[in-house]
Length: 308
Image 1 (tube, rainbow, N blue to C red):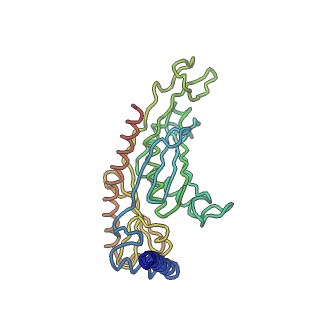
Image 2: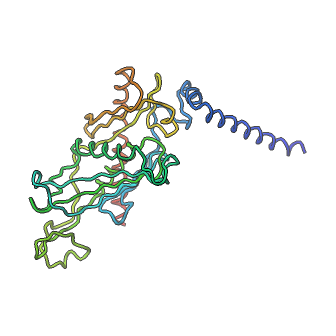
Image 3: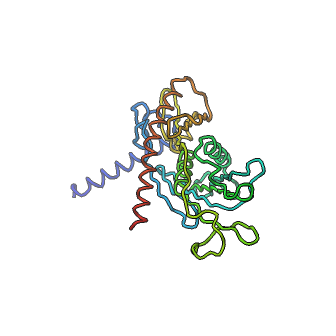
C-alpha cells in the first residue's frame, strides 16, 4: 500500500509547490521577475536576448488582395490588404495612397472591454503608417493607374487575435508580409470612362485593360522592429504582456533591410544610459536578419503550395 501512496504524495507535494509559486508570482510580480533576472533567465524560460518563436503564413484571407497571419509567441495578428480604385488628389496625381487600421477586439485580451476601443489601438495604427511611409518600403507611384484620373487606395487592416506583448512588432511583420503577398488585380476602363477591377474572366472583357497582367509591388527597404523592456541592468527582448505589465521602460527600434535606423521610440520610464539604447539597436539588427529569413521562407512555402 505504501508504494501506491508515495506517488500520490509526491504529486500532491508538487501541486502544492506549483500553487505556492503561482501565488508568489501573482502577489509579488516584480520580485518574482527579478529572481529570474538574477539568474539571466525569464519566467517563460527564455534567455533575456531571446525572442519568442515566430511564424508567418501568407494568404490567410482569401477575399483580400494580400494577407498574412503572424504568430509571435502567443501574440497573433491577422493582416489583410484590399485595393479600391480612387481619384488621386491634385497634389499627388500620379500616386496611390495607403490607409492603416489596427483593431483590438475584446476577444484578444481581457483588458479590452466591449464597446470601449483599446487606447493603444490608434497609437499603433499611427506608428505603423509612419513607419511604412518613412521606410521607403512602398513606392506610391506604383499604385497609380491613370495619372490624374485613377489610382489604388490600399486599405491595410490588422486585427489582433491575441495580445500577449510586443504588439507593434507583430503588427509590423504582419503588415510587411501582407504587402509581400499582395497581388495587384487587372483593371479596365469602361465606355463611360469609369475604371473598375476585372474579375476571373479577364481575358473575355470587352473593355481595354489598363494593366496587362497581375503583378506584385516592388518593395523597397523593408522595416522590421524589435521591442526591448529595460529593467535596471537587464534588457528583455520581445517582452510578454506579463513582463510589460511589470516593467515601466520600453524601447522599440525599427531598422530596415539595409540596417538603417528608421525610428526609435521610448515608452514610459527613463533610459539611464546610451549604452542600453545602443544595445537595443544591436539586438534589433540581429532580429531583423532572423525576421527576414522567416519572411523569405514563408514566400517559398507559398510558391511551393501554388505549384502543387
